[in-house]
Image 1: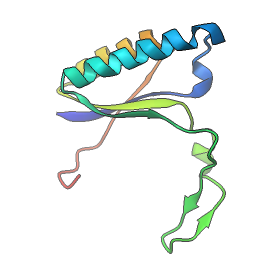
Image 2: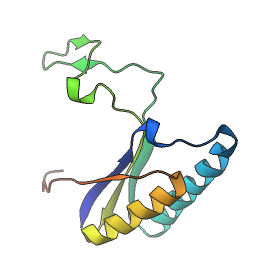
Image 3: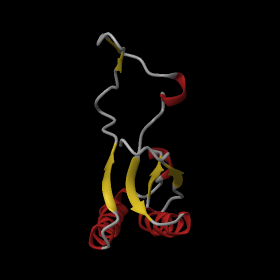
Image 4: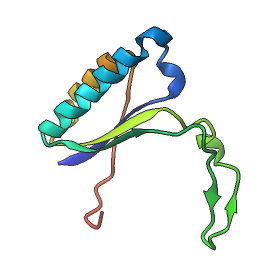
Length: 113
């Protein structure tokens, strides 16, 4: 079993305001199904109202980000699945619920994690 990150950036979900509640419920339903199937690990959305900080090895913080992650936002979930094909199928379910394409990434295998 491997862990997969399924995610999308905030601007990808271009839904009229009056449909947001229905989209939210559809997404929560897929998460409930993932929990029932025993594949759910974690899900959530980045709180864009709270600015990120970068923490150095010494514990100091700065109010910046790596350039590559400056626009990191949106929603994501982590599922534990037996195959990439299963991950693609779950990503498609989430894409239908959220009404936007999802990115799929596989976590590297680390026996200590």
